[in-house]
Length: 252
Image (cartoon, rainbow, N blue to C red; front, top):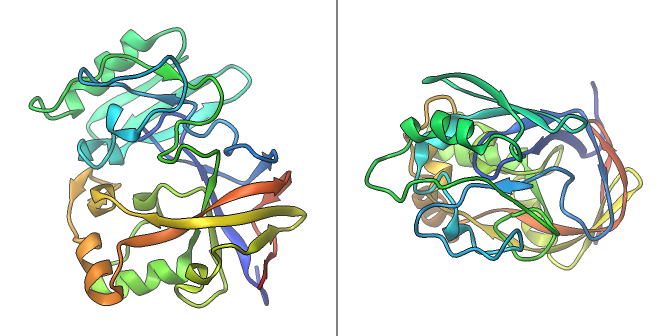
């Protein structure tokens, strides 16, 4: 496809927080909501302090920063049946309904985790908003040109899945998104208010193909750009359908 304007290049969701990325062709967004079925479930660990399915900090869940092997999980989710299929290079695929069979999931995932870390205890379903890293019901927007710039500094091609974003755009200069805070962005008819930068953690150091740490993304960001941010958060102000290839417009 030949694009003369910035466009939506990739859409991702993560039904179980930190346990698998799923590529989408399109998605329906609602104003003031996280991306549908994104981080609807999360995996508390034995040291967690949770309050039902209301939002709590990511430190209460198993995640890629502390459990790097989780980064190699891929997911496929059927929103009608609420069945999810998880795959990992070191495990056979598993298909299950998170609300009905957390025991099967725990049996599957536990061998992937370092024994010295707090063990997973179950699956928690969100009651109001997705259990994202932010307490606000935001989505994330990332720039493929920025990814290429960071890849060049590290001397390797970085997989977008390292950054667990929702929307990747292309056709803009590297780091153009850093100027968007407080601005409006539209994907076709959908409008979003950009709210803040995304400060990154060690999960981005992990290769999603292997689940092993292989590059110092945080060090490269700090050394070359004097920050550890990658991408921006945004709140959906006008809902609608976003499809890969949609034109991106920025109201400066």
